[in-house]
Length: 117
Image (cartoon, rainbow, N blue to C red; front, side):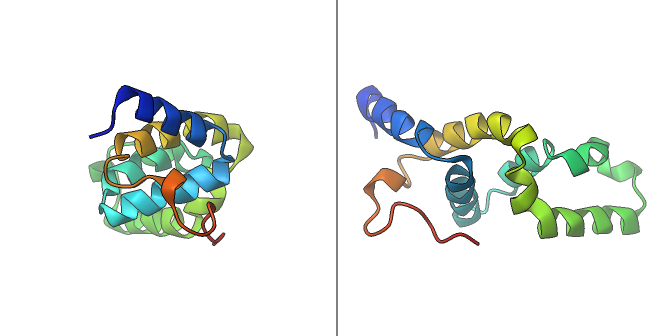
């Protein structure tokens, strides 16, 4: 269990990182945890998914599948869009702090930045 001081240090470390790095780390943690809810929460803030915030049951199944395909193909580039980056930065940092007991990126060996993808 992390102490408040350790959490504060980790939060400060994260807040100093560029948004694409935070995005990659948060998505990596979400993937490892199979946290689909986090992906959906972030995706709802992307410009091209504003219409997808509607109730999925109201969609024609084919349209819903098409929307999901779009999200999967464009998630990373749209999540780095400057229009939403500041909002997402906050969520990425919070998410990474929430999962600090499982994984901390300030303690990685080798490069402190994941390979861009």
